[in-house]
Amino acid sequence: MLQVIPITQARQDFLRLIDEVSSGASRYLITKQGKPAAVILGYEEYSRMVETLKVMGDDLLGRQLRRGMAELMRGEMVPFEVEDG
Image 1 (cartoon, rainbow, N blue to C red):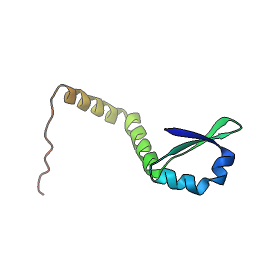
Image 2: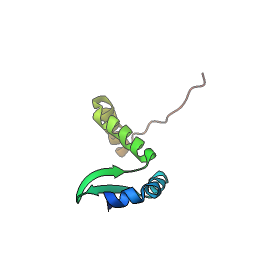
Image 3: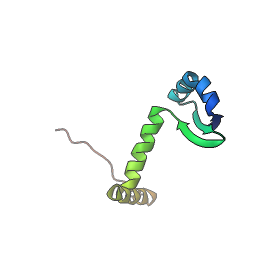
């Protein structure tokens, strides 16, 4: 869950906040004059979000993903086998 803190507190506790988000324990919404200004989250979570946005923004990948999910829901699973090369 996103914890909301003012920028003055974020400035004072910056190193602690970085440690918390790096471990995946927390995410923070930083406010400036009561309005949302920034978000602090761990790099791993950020990377996953970027990859998800790439997939969802790619028409071909999106269609393939939706088709695969529909097949899965119908029980039409195909085993994945790696050939020795």
